[in-house]
Image (cartoon, rainbow, N blue to C red; front, top):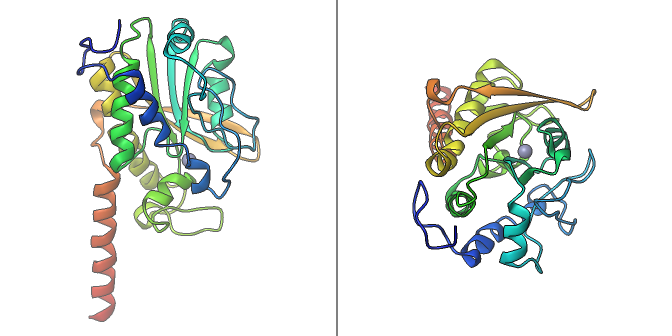
Length: 248
Ligand SMILES: [Zn+2]
């Protein structure tokens, strides 16, 4: 199906709109302090464990090339470009089959503001490829540096033991629930384009010492979605509440 036709969600964006939307993420290595590292094509294998893997459409790729490579894809995998996550989740989602289109960006499906708008364009464009059977919408647990960055570096635990999401203990059930709600919210643009029978939401848990990743299915229907913007708002309210409690 060519651009301009109707898909499940809306009018299919053009190739140029799709490329522009992808380019919104082209500086993501900077978020994690690694500017200038090489991006990879969504059709290629990600970089090895320990290196960040941002996917970008190669500059010289034409729409025709893209359509021809896309024709053999069965699955779209959206995940964080994280150095511990991207490669591992690609392997566990059968990336080596050569049938997985990888969208690896900072935060995976968890996005905000103009980044979320770009995701809507990307999802709308990819939905024209009707042979796709599955969309895996994922991010990973408490160490996602991109989500931390979206929350102005205050919202997330990291290896140095900073407080977890909304002050929940890092790695706790409560924190996992918040991340699952963020992932559920992030899955919605994909559900809109592909339908809920094709989209699965997953939370990746990374065991750094074993270089292993476990994936947990998220029951989207049973979980209340939470946007980054709502979370920011809740965190501010909590900070104000804490300050007021300290004063009284
Ligand atoms: Zn991450």
